Amino acid sequence: MFYFFANVLETTLMYTIFVLSVYLLSGLTGFFSLGHGAFITIGAYTAGLATLRFGLPIWLAFILAIVMGLVGGLIIGVPTLKLRRDYFLLITFGFGEMVRALLLWTSQLTGGAMGMAGIPYAAELPLIAISVVVVLFIIANLKRSSFGRTCISIRDDELAAQAMGINVYAHKIKVFLLSAAIASYGGALLAFNMTFIEPNLFDWLESARLIVIIFVGGINSVTGALVTALFYYSFGELFRFANVWRDVILAVLVILVIIFRSQGLFGNFELSPKWIKSLFNRRKSPKRGA
Amino acid sequence: MDLLRVEAISKNFGGVAAISNFSMVQPYNTISAIIGPNGAGKTTTFNMISGVQTVDTGKIFLEDVEITKLPSHKIQRFGVSRTFQNIRLIEGLSVIDNVKLSYTSRLTYTMFEEFIHSPRVRKNETVLEDIAMEYLEFFDLSKYAKSKPKSLSYGLQRRLELARALMNEPKLLLLDEPAAGLNPAETRELMGTIQKIQEQKNLSIIIVEHHMDLVMKICSIIHVIDFGKKIAEGTPQEIIKNKAVLQAYLGDMGGEIC
Image (cartoon, rainbow over all chains, first blue to last red; front, side):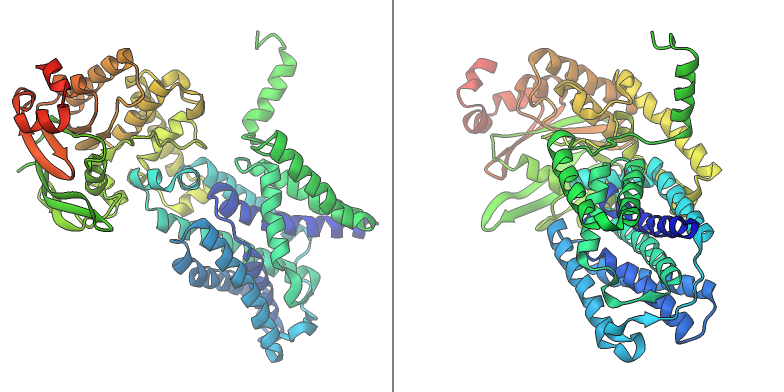
């Protein structure tokens, strides 16, 4: 039973990393990528290939996965981030499918549709949990400083951002690369946790789901992305029999959120030490507000 | 040396000349205006100076450095700030964060320091917070610091945009129809504010405007454009008497003012 829950937690946390990586790109900066799964696949396959085919140590596999994610991000990001958002979305969609086709095509190396089995089991719960905390820490820090403000300004009004002295294009590339790096690191974790990977690991539907989760949670709230991701993925894992229903619930939630709470479930709320403190203060002295 | 020198700039939109052969010189510490009827090419001129639109022919110099081909974010870093005709505030950011935004290029910390929120980031952010607060106080906006720009009235949003434009300590401030949508009382207040800014911050201001009394009272040089061509330049007194201007721009109103 313990293993079952540990397993659920591992999977949930890994997906949370993916959601957080997309939060940076879609939530904060307003760019939608339907090919974000490609970075996860790239990370997973790099990790798998590095250990299985080239016999490299695990830590090096992680670094290589991040590097490959960055390379992929550069190849796609540099020519497309100057385009309008809708074209960017289409191109990333194509990129995702391209990566999938490439993996099937190079079957001698990657095992093609048969997938790649026997990857060493190296990513256990502590490592995954620490990774989530670190990624969360980085994103929360970025959001509250100049980086986050710049992201939001690009999301809301690129022209105004440019007139405020912000190099919009350069910043978009930064965001995209960072997001790609986090996603491919998460992909490597996934490979080392599941020990089996295949090209259809992460199709565009899965990428779209990541974006939807962010919108349900609220684009201005990292907490929202985190909580919604934890809830959505653990629900699916815990109630396998009701797996189909979680998408139904998500779909209903999306409709309700769009109609009644367009800023997302969490709006501008962020869970911070300050907030927790204020909660306690309120309990101690109820008259404080009056 | 003049602050800004515009040499015969032109811009065509598919055969229609939005502005052709426009030249002007902006000295230090002056307020000047570009006026003209709707569609005369005033905003296009502004967009070219601030780098939002590219220049077809001609050259623009800021303190004898050519800025013709630079993108707008670089021009802002050279010390040219602008406001927009239709207010462009960032809705997702609070009032104070909007002001902080135009200071971004001057911050010295790197992205990797932001990852861990290093002491240098913390120090920079505290200083930035103080500076931004100063500017908000200057415009009497400090009590709205934490609210979203959407919750402010139109006049306050205009003031916030001014605060944001001043935050990077510009040498040249471009105001695109700052009085648009303001009532007479607010317009009068704005005139006072613009003069106060000019005196206290020692900068040069160019205004594109329709409100004639605002322009006549606070500007020392006026450039008049009609159908993409400059038809007159001079002090308000000279402009009022200029026949071409009366005909082209003021029309019937000419009699009223004189």
